[in-house]
Image (tube, rainbow, N blue to C red; front, side, top):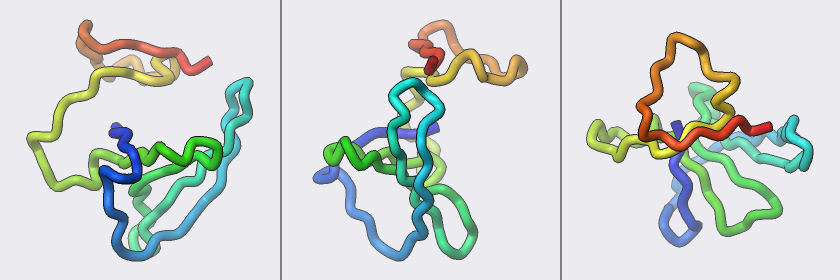
Amino acid sequence: MQAAFTPDQVQIVGSFSDYLRVSDEADRKEHVFHFCPDCGSQVFYTEPDEPDLVVVSVGAFADSSFLPPTESGYDSRRHPWLAVPATIERHDGQ
């Protein structure tokens, strides 16, 4: 689960490692995933052509009251055992 922010809404502190991945979608967009160099957990990602976007993994927040999701991306790839509420906007990511 991820939450998107503008750069002025987040403060990135500490070290991280980068991994560049090209999307398998038709636009072949580049994504740069930023990982904790100690445990390997993905913390956030950015897109070189969208400088006003920082996407943070919700698990990086130690906050059980974090707002619930509003969208499901790549819904066609979702495991069948994962229930998604009917109120969630679904995208296939194709």
